[in-house]
Length: 57
Image (cartoon, rainbow, N blue to C red):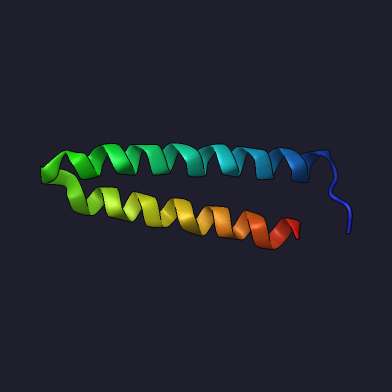
């Protein structure tokens, strides 16, 4: 199955969002008051990245 332009753009945008979620999650983990939110952001980034890998392979 080939991907069209819209699908490619959506996957690229999802990976950018996953990267930003991961970076923000790491930043929140080091701010000790918001450690739980940081962990949830990293989990969300992992879910998005996994979905992109499943849809592109």
